[in-house]
Length: 386
View 1 (cartoon, rainbow, N blue to C red):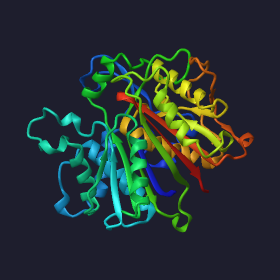
View 2 (view 1 turned 45 degrees about the vertical axis):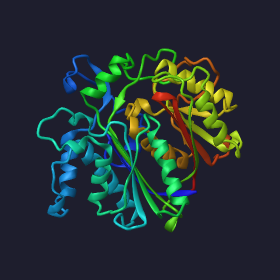
View 3 (view 1 turned 30 degrees about the vertical axis):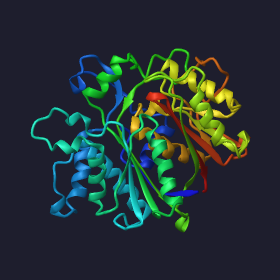
View 4 (view 1 turned 135 degrees about the horizontal axis):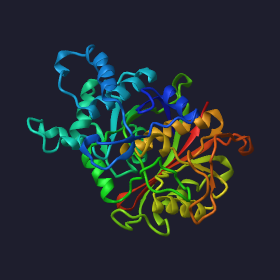
């Protein structure tokens, strides 16, 4: 196992994990109606991060850095640095050391820089974003980039476990970050995938997904130093069913194989809940219900956090792991906001309210699932240690 010894979330609900988790517990959503945003003519629902607040927080960090690092950082770059900085400070480790490595999880990065005049052309490449992140902390190890559609956040944590288990490093910071732009919103609109109202995962009346911006960081360690860790990464699995460029498998083949692998050595009674991908699109939610049912996990409570943050793409797997770990340590199952009546074919246990879980005997494990374009599927098994 590897242990999470520091974390941070920057999103529309706040700039630190405590603030964000508190908002979720109080059933506050960061998703709002956007009109004319990014020059997109059709209104859409999304959770955005206030750029002026990002600038203010980043300026306070930037002023303490050497002048050699001064550059015109983008919103995306600022958010990933702010989140990483706060998580690393919480972990209390030296991010410049040879035993520390960065892994960046993102799908789009600085894609909005494409076509802009007088812009450093390399800044649109994800490897360059990861270099800027490492450079900020004076880390000379080559950073890793994970960009595998919406499963990136889980894949990045699996990659971190491989780095630590191989002895390559002692610490890994997994940073998931994503910002929205006209390119991204228009792309999802072209799929007719966006809802004109707050998304309702697994609900009979769901009409599509909401988008979101976020940066989230987990600092993992090879051991639970000074009992800082509040959860541990146990294992993960990635499977691609190659069903379609954008449509999930109708039999949930890839995700079923992921769950089958992940639960091979534990019983369903040991799993407190499953945090689903839960995008609120017709096909994704149906596919997840089939995978859960085929795996014999029907009785485990299932939730989705997308109504609070929107779909944050490359950041989703990291952000939702952090929030789920807080809930697991509090012994609760967070509800799927907006869920009223099941709209999937399989009978699974969708959580429609925040509730205590003593009936599961304070089960130690929870599962985070993700699925994405290209037939990609991934899930990770985590354990509370507090």
